[in-house]
Image 1 (cartoon, rainbow, N blue to C red):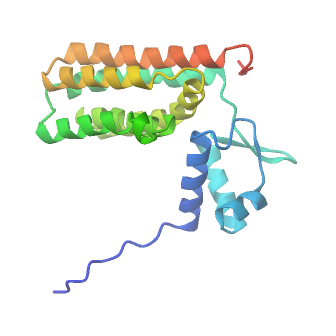
Image 2: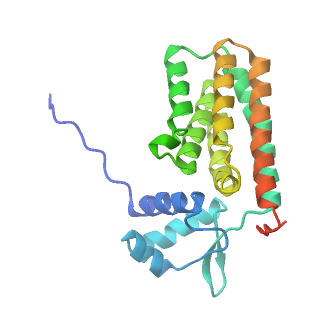
Image 3: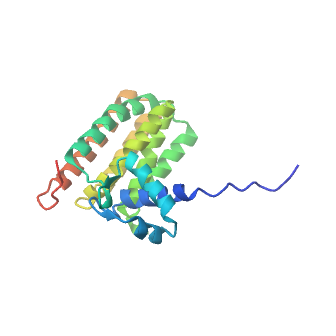
Length: 227
């Protein structure tokens, strides 16, 4: 039997472009409303125009970019309606996921939740708001996975991808990462003790507080977020 470890094939050029552009859009390195040139993006990523064009089409399906006649592509705006729709769905799904996850937290899962809870909130180590939000996403997806419903966890993951960009914009106005880390710790305790109703209530409060932060930041007069 061969002892050589098989090497995973590299991601396709389109997948590489999708991952890189999605990360830049969610981190607001490509801000809402920015016009995107296929040629400029291809040079920036070191790829051909064909995979970049295919990646932009994929991101359009996710609602992150839009094709504009005679302008190429533009990064989708974040509207008040977008914020309400994304957080409304999170409020429908995540408290129920937390309720179902309660009592399912074994030692390994508890260690995982503790780890992702602490990973992003280390400003003394140079952690950024985006670092925290990536850890925040991992935490919420891990809770949803503990519900035992894989489709629920995937939907939560997609919603968190959409809300990351909103939260980056919100945290630029008010840093709530410390409060969020504290809320995670309280939720972990409720999950570990099997307190389903408490876990659901804590999750609902977390998601509602995040929505309030985003709305307060993005409806400030100087932000001019469309309705």
